View 1: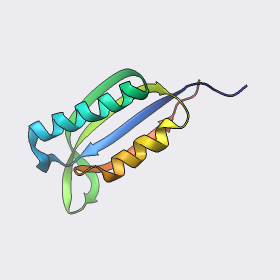
View 2: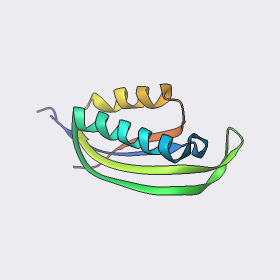
View 3: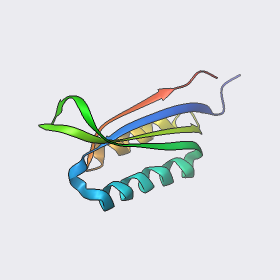
Length: 98
């Protein structure tokens, strides 16, 4: 039998140059997208941290970790939104074991 929903861990890094209001707007945007397509279990804002290596000549990024449950086709859509959103430097969506 196919899975109806899956658990996912979503980590994304926001460019700190967008400012505090811009960061909060992006966090709320992605929180809303997840809540529209599934259940948001937790959201953990790690804040500004040094990157392991420079991305686009930047050495710092604002990290956000979310845990959610959604249908299997949702991660592809969320990844597409991350890629077209200005201010998102990197994102990673991982399926968690049931």
